[in-house]
Image 1 (cartoon, rainbow, N blue to C red):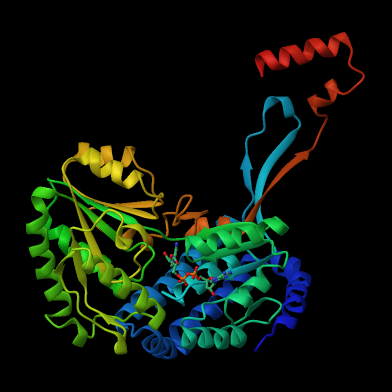
Image 2 (image 1 turned 180 degrees about the vertical axis):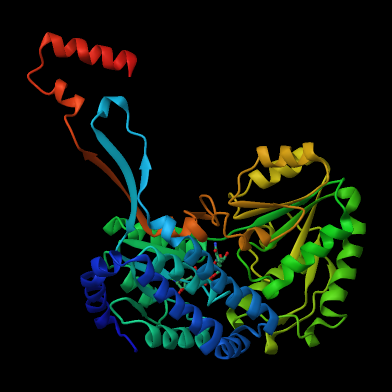
Length: 469
Ligand code: NAD
């Protein structure tokens, strides 16, 4: 269904009226709903998803299978396995001062939720949070990105096919659509996108005091120290950096490497890039494209600035605007104020910054906003501990990149500029749940001994309580 601005409030009210019904649904009902979504993604629309992503991002088939279909199916399977336990009430201890009562926590649905998603993994980053929202018993309005129109259109079809609109609905549109939706008093907003728009979303949420999960981005550093296995580091970095043509929130944004290792590292990168994408990545079936002309121009302007200011293109550097192709590019000798070292790159360009001491590398990281991911390549435990203890990041891989995203036992999300709140597995369920506190009085409670009027005897009991309990 195509919604217009005038429909949003009515749609919101329909979901609001249905929220307790959905929120009180059983584990079995929610699993049935998740099964419908799983079947749609894994079977019914699988080829259509591949096709949409080919049109929107020239996404290689295998990447679609692994990073869009498998990740959502895995999130669904994980939720189905654990949902019964998550939905149980969790008993907690009750202090002696509350003798005669028992306490527990119940995860209940927040209510009507809004999911706003980006374009780089359209299905994964829309349906992934949707799985958590459904598991937690919410009704949901989705606003996907306008940058990937084929994917958004297909997701609208999938949603209208398998859900009633008072349960889950998808609204397509650009910034104005988000702006209008954000005026509604959602019980929770789950936003994935840039820190810049994250601030706008947070401001809008504050008007209704809607709770918020912000899955943002930023510059995720990679540190390679003197003890690292350079060949293995290059192998994993060239994969993590150039997957989806570098358009990944946890993509290694820049490399900090001990200056003594730089030349060997570049040689190793060359070897692995050749292996992954051949000497002509433009013809490779394993390499994607930039999403829109606007995004291509932004990356092109970074490269032009770097080239004009004597940045050294170590590898790659070729581009073609007509096909939105940018060759996997490694660049060094940048001025500290270069845009490539200031802005989140979100594309297939990897700046290399050399350092003389690990302390200086840590100072450099801490001079920038807290990252979504921080990668460390080292075989020295002391160095690894030093980097970890002196930095803060949403997540960290040691001797690899990206893979922490795929373990649903780990929380996924950033800190401050890179995000607020966590997703995946239980952490996603938690984001969409209100942890309701319960205490049940079943017999005389000792607190009643302290009710007014306050006599000197009660004062003595109060003093004893403060001292001993
Ligand atoms: P974006 O912030 O431009 O857009 C995200 C969504 O917000 C889209 O649906 C868009 O329509 C909407 N939007 C854009 N401007 C808006 C405004 N002014 N008001 C309200 N809504 C608005 O992000 P993007 O370009 O789609 O994605 C790239 C960014 O997302 C990068 O910064 C990347 O790191 C981040 N990202 C983060 C994660 C994560 O899980 N942490 C995942 C993917 C991408």
